[in-house]
Amino acid sequence: MIKVTPLSPQFGLLIEGDGQTTLDSLDLIPYFNEFNKAEGGALLFRGFKSDIQGFRNVTEKYGKDFKIALTNLDEREYPDQDYSLATVNEGFYAINFHTETNIPYNMNIFWMYCVQPAKEKGRTGIVDGVKVLNELTQSTIKHFEQEGGYWSVSQIGQEEWEHFFPGMSADQMKEHLAGLESVYAVELDDKNSLSFRFEQPPINKTAFCQVDAFIARILDWPEHVLRQDGTQYPKDIITEVNQAVYKHAIWLDWQPGDFLVVNNTRAMHAREAFEDPERQLLVRYSDIAEGVFKNSEQE
Ligand SMILES: [Fe+2]
Image 1: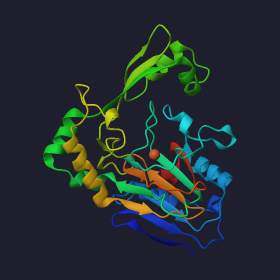
Image 2: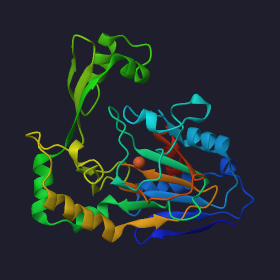
Image 3: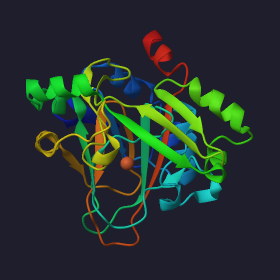
Image 4: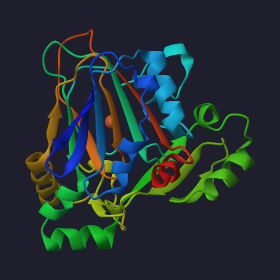
């Protein structure tokens, strides 16, 4: 018996199993279909049997093109040395709401699996970017639409970029980057250090349901959301976003085995500070596999 209820009003679903069914054997396609709807955006599966291998299997069944991050590689651990399956950032500190960035790639899906929740605190926050956008004043929306947002990625050493583009020569990597959507001004200096510009406008159409949403890293890394002239957004605008986000944030009290799927182009997430060293959450990022939505339409 599977019970389905809204995760929060007009956003997301909580899908609860009976403790017997394995995550692996569950047909997730009807639930993924929710991502095409206006209230879609996050799925929390609870009460299904799984383990880390089950998490790997289920994500690979419904996802494709798993990504590794060009930034903060050292802050995570990787079971089996697979860089596409990582623990969340090390440390106990709070992290403000953000979209997961995987520069130089865009990615639609953010997958999380809870091995062990913290005894206290350590919750994950999620907020619907559609609700955040609806909360902002017209002048702030206009400001975001005019100024957009871009990351200036500079001086990535050769040893580091070779991790992300294995087997590529400097010229091949440069050509690869130049062909990517959202990447501009790719440069290599005389030591082969890499610099480029990655466009990520805070207001954008979401993947799947194609509605406007506010998605940015303006709260956790304001220095990386630059306006056209290279300056940061002013404090009052950041405060306005903060207030809108916290008005609509929902906080997940993790249970062991919880499996969360988020439309990373629609919802932002955050971490509450905690003290329990046993807390273990795993993350992966990817796009959705071919055929997931096609199959659901045929049903
Ligand atoms: Fe994150």
